[in-house]
Image (tube, rainbow, N blue to C red; front, side, top):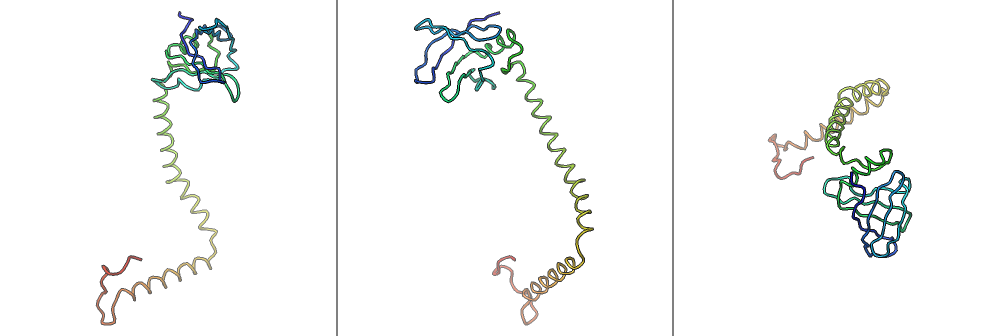
Length: 173
């Protein structure tokens, strides 16, 4: 299995990309800078993956706070090798990409099922409980308001001669 990978290293202080070689170890990544030969050790617990979750993306690993160092690897097979060498790491496994579509579909169907269940079962149950607690005075007032509104609309729709007024010239209510 391949353990050395070509990468680009960004130090977080400048915009310069530096060529590097990354070696996958059991507990850390060893990064060797091509221009100086300097070796950096990144323990897995200090690294976060910010890219490489989706097909076609470069793998981007970062370490540090506000001015974080970054490591860019163009070959996504790097993640598979990383998971094979250090299986207890928290990095994305590209082999699981196919299952993501299935999980997304299952989650979508579950959301639709829950929404339909709420609409057809929970909402009527809540309405039945709420309706039993509405005071009769509120029901009477609502009914009177609806009847009065209907009378006003009906009387406005007819002219004094008994013919229906044109609805084209009036805006809808």
